[in-house]
Length: 470
RNA sequence: UCCCCAGUAGCUCAGUUGGCAGAGCAGGUGGCUGUUAACCACCGCGUCCGUGGUUCGAGUCCGCGCUGGGGAGCCA
Image 1 (cartoon, rainbow, N blue to C red):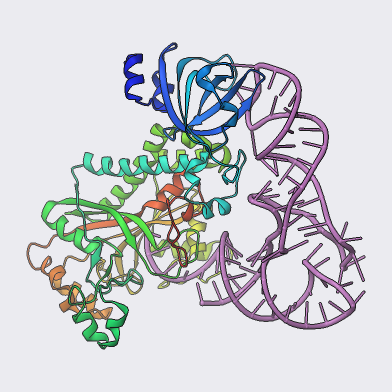
Image 2 (cartoon, rainbow, N blue to C red):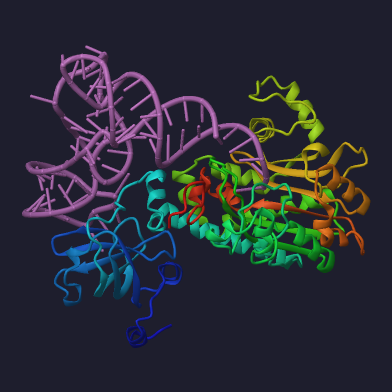
């Protein structure tokens, strides 16, 4: 499309991804990226240039005699270059296309201290150089997939007429049972000597306690009761001292909230979302996913295929308890009605008993938060969790308690001050309707799709207890 | 926060019942080749995580600490 002159003049770069998709031989192109490896022959060198647009690198042939290729043999892994030349079919095995270099421009040579080598590194090592790991095949692929999945989240909801709501990051709702909060304050350390605890809050920026959000749910509910179907998709913060491979202090959560929606439709939507995200990745990230199929988890193709093609198992909490009691498997924690399902219970259901995602619903009211709708049996609430093999809980949701008197009773039961939630309770005073929603842990979703087993490896720069570098 | 495991070269790891510290890869030099985790030859590479102790002698055994990993809890 661009004339050679135009490409030269503007130095416009061609992305390797689009060259590989639409290339025509003979075309003069310009790529800009980072040297992955150099292999020398007697009279010329092979370069592999990666620009991050896709997993594949572009092979470059640099003739040592060509005036524009001076100093090719100085190029090291990690160096940044621009290469202009003719695109042609590669006579070698392993790649369809290559560029016969006419001009190689060096942005910077990477010295030999560059930590990434032409070999496999451990995930633990790469976490310590998280600023460089997106330059590896695996992490480049993971973060391209993460990007595609976020796009797919928006497309899923937009196609169904949901409205995207930006709920606040800083909130004043003190507690809601979703974990420890990160406090937000504008006071300086010295100021705390001037005030006692209560007056410190009054003299702080907002005049009361503030914290980073642990969930946009309550605010999303208010918008659902105005706009119908809404969702949030943003960062979420938990100050829990959790040290596991599936918890982070800062993570992204997708939280749809649907008016005129009961628990079974809520579960339908959750199942459809998970299926849509997996399908989207299979259709749009084939090359990147193949890396994970081959090098990360060989059983991944089967797992993803099962998720897309088979209905999720659905089982009530009471049924799940009976089933676990009857199983011959010995569990680390005992199972009894009234106690929450533990990690090994959930894994047994998803991985061994059903072999597919499981939705467990109608949990005992005593172990669930105040906003979940009390069922007619008075003992359970209309809650649901989606449990997937390998990860455990990926979604938690419920039908919300829309009856004012019951909601107030539940708040009293769980020790909450109703006056703090006057705005939330107003939604049950003025045109309250049945409604439902859930929260999807976005990183856990990326883990599911890629087979990556540690949440720190699907976050660009993970925040976990004691770790805030980068 | 609790339980378990690990920490040795730039990276991945071996190191026997306690006896002078090893390999592969990466890096350097030379050679060869339309190569592709290139190949062949040669070369260098150490606070054995820190600290205290046991011992004639500690990478190895013991205490404490730090860092990393796995599991549990909390949850998404």
